[in-house]
Length: 454
Image (cartoon, rainbow, N blue to C red; front, side):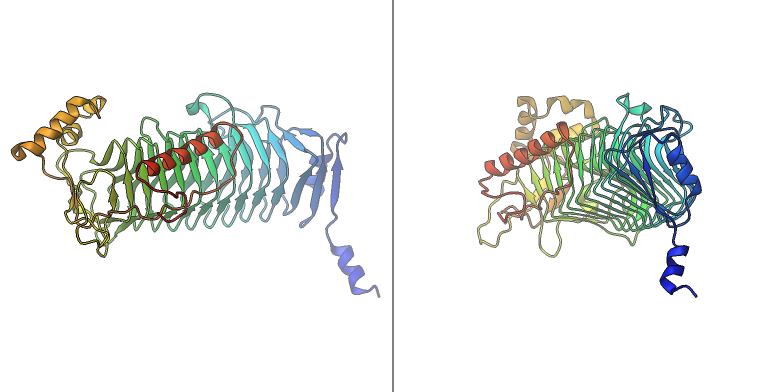
C-alpha cells in the first residue's frame, strides 16, 4: 500500500507554468486545469479572450500581459474561489452595450489583486460575486470623453465584497449597487465622474479613501447604516460638484473627513428618510469649498457638531425655498461647531462663544432664491447688502441656522488618508490640498495640522 503522503500527492492538482512563446498555452492550461491548481504565467504578451471555469489561482510574473486586442472582455471568471494576481490586463473592446471589461466575474469569493488594468472599457466587473476581494489593483480607462468610458469598478449584487488599496484614474463611475456590508478602504479615485456611486448598499464602510478631481466624490443613495470616515474629498468640482451627496440615506455617519476645495462639501436630500433615523456629521473639516454644506428644504433629523467650517464662500445653504436648517441640530451634548466667520467672544473662558452663531447673511438669503447671483459672491455689492442688514435689522433675513454652542478654538484636525496614488496630477493635487489646509490654518494662527492637536 502506498504511504498516505503519496496518495495525497497523487490527488493534488497539478501546478502549471506557462512561458512566453507557447502560443495557445495559456488557454490550454486554463481549460485543462483541475480544481485548486496554480497556473503561473512567466512573462510575455498573451493575446485573445480567456475564460476560467475551474476554481484555481492564476499568477502573472515578469510583466505577463493579457491583451484582448480590442475585442470583447479580456478575462472572464465563471467559477467560484478564483484568485488572479500580478497580471497586466489591457485591450478590451469598446462596446458599452456589451459591457466589454478587463475582468468580468460571475461567481462568489473571487480575489483580484495586484494587477494593472489599462485601456479597458469596464475595468473589474463583479456580478453576483459575494465575499469577493478587489485589492491593490491599478485601473486606468481609455483616454476618451467621460460619458463614453466604462466603470473602472462595478459591483452588482455582491454582498460582503472588499475594495481595498486600489488606484483608479480616468474612468467613469465606481459603481456599487444592491450589495450589503461592503468595505471600501484606502483607495485613490481621481479624474472621473462619480468617485463612488452607491445604491441599495446597507451597512457599507467607506474609510480612508481619497476622492480627487472628480465631478462628484461620492454619491450615496437608498441605503441604511453607512459609515464614511477619514476620507479626503479634494477638488470635486463638476456641474454637481459634491464631495459627498446623500439621498434617501438613513443612519449615516460622516466623521473625520476633509472636504477641501469642492463646489459643495456635503449635500443632503431627504436624508434621513425615516422619522426614527438620525444622521451624524461630526469632526469634519470644510475648507475653501463654494458651499460647506447644502441641504434641501425637507432635510431634518441630522446632528452636526465639532466640525470646522473654514472660509467657505457659504458655510451652509438651504438649496430651495421654504426650509430652514433649524430642523437639524447644530450641536451635541453642549458642543457646537467652529465657524471662521463667528463674530462673538468667549468671556467666561469655557471654550464656547457667549452668543449663538447665526447664519443670517442677507446676500446668502437672496442667492438661495436666485442662484445666478452667486457671480457676485465676495464683491463690494454683496458686502454692502450684508452691512445694510446688520445696520437696519428690519431688512435682516431669518437665520437659516443657530449654533448655540459655537467653538472658539478649532477642534483637532483629522489625519489625511494615505492611499496609494498614481504619478502626476492626483498626487500633485493632494499635496496642493494639504497646502491649502495648512495655509487656512495658518491664517487662524494654528501651528499644527493633519493630525496634530491645535
